[in-house]
Length: 378
Figure 1: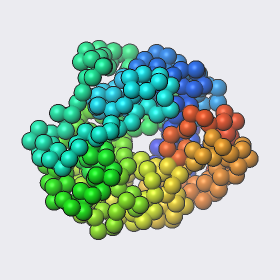
Figure 2: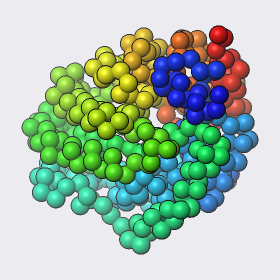
Figure 3: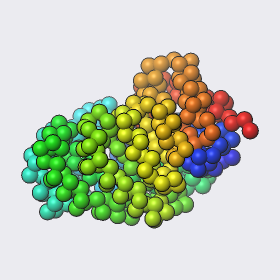
């Protein structure tokens, strides 16, 4: 099987020849190549070469996330103005040293310092917060100017290497964007004091978010999956009642719209979503690509609840990759393969992004365990 066929089998809840493996990698590749985070964000060639070098060093894997598919990079092909650099965020080389540990951090004070910002969004939309501060409007167009070169990078991975691309593009929900723009503390207060205003913004803007996601995605030949990131709706922030009123109806609308357009919805879920897992059973079988966990949600519970409806992906914890031993990594990967991989429908991966201080021997163990222990015995 090629990697593309292997991942497609898992997404279709079948057993491939072995468990596919697909870690998220950004800062780890930069560190291995001696690149600063500033260089990784603002350059095209060296980050790509760093990624290829890392990929070959560890023997390759199945689902790939090269820099042009990462929202950190200025050359993020799917829609460059949604990269963090186009908002007034704090960046390495601009607000921090060039090798600051985080690619981007939200500003303080937040972009919406007070609740009047909701009305501003209703009047002018989210786009009014785009910023060219210290970046320059000209660079906004560079990903389009270099489109042929960027497409050649995608072709290298998909056509030449026969690797599955992580997704065809992103979709954010207004709820999550508002949580970032207001900052989490203010937004949690707003949820209780002015839920009707949050609902109004979500009602007005959700169709635009859906349309943008569909227009900016990569061609079907690369992937028919759009990735929906859930950052601020996990079970640790607010009640099920609020989730049912302010978040899930919009998530459901996105998934149903994508399905009508023959697009699979996939999820990257940060924080602990264990209490929310049953809601995902409301999505029809065949509408979901995969659901990816970051090491916080009980992934074994997720397999139990969702394994007959959608592919499970994850979730070797960043702490284990950075601080554990190869033996500990192998033990956990074997457990994931034994439980989540049973019957197919599983992709082994890192829990969210592979941290920059990952031990190379631990990363190699994760990859190799999928290739050896993860073989399905017919």
